Image (cartoon, rainbow, N blue to C red; front, side):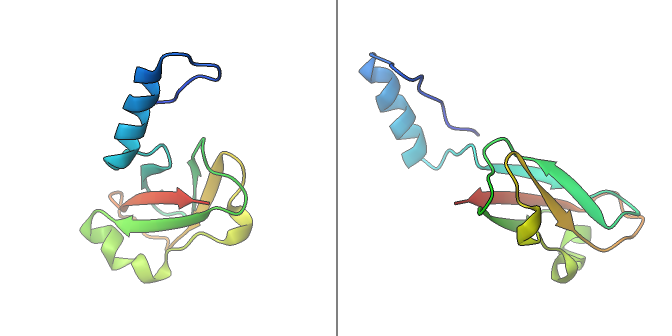
Length: 104
């Protein structure tokens, strides 16, 4: 679940309180899920809150993802505003799904 965004100039303190509560409960707009492309060696992930210098962490969500985790990574140079690129093994499996977190 994503965290609520408080508009610039917001006067309603209840909205700030709710946003802070959601962050404290673990909500974030810097997370997502990606399924790697079958028979390819890279997958581009659109991540609106990602920026250059962010650290991207991947966590396997399926057995086929867990089987290739050692050969799956995000090169620093591919982390740019709004996206990052995952390098991975090429195979025909279509369910190589990972959770991701971009921090920075």
